[in-house]
Image (cartoon, rainbow, N blue to C red):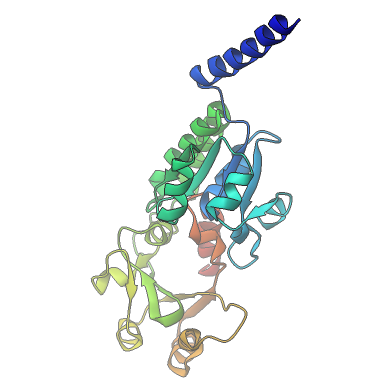
Length: 273
């Protein structure tokens, strides 16, 4: 009897080892990054995604708020994540190195996805998450649909209106950024490039006023008081909006390289019609 039980136990262990060796899809996935949260929610099979980051349920930055509320949240702490017994953790390029390192030392597989800085990188990000989740076919369908929808939305006017992204503390996005790609796809020219900005950086308000853009896209206000947001309603900026078109769009649609950027492009085009 004891031998039979031992034989069955050994058989079970070997079966589990064989499944792992064959590279079966992960059964318990935890995401600790807003952008991987969204891609995982789009692609995971029912029951596969067991927790997503706390920020995914923040209405100010989450573009999939209602879907996110269906999942337990985590705070990105290694000890907390480890207790969830994941066989895969999805993280971002700049997720805490302490968290990532400790989880890996504990034997947990952690996949860190790079930041998406262009629209052309989004299909690849979708396919990579699909590969990690064992959902390659679903990812291929989503990536193909995204590429087709993007191609249909892309504008290539002969005369591009000049637009400025203006966020708290006079932050803006220049070349080599997803925000710049969104502006370009919508048919605009980013005035930050005229100022020589690459990536993200600050554009002094005085310089922005001298550039006189055709459209100002302001960041949204967040709960609580912040002096850095005062520039969004500065009298000079309000006067510029009175003379030119102005628009405040949801930051959530611009944050991550997901199909949600298509809505940002569409809204931009509508704002200047």
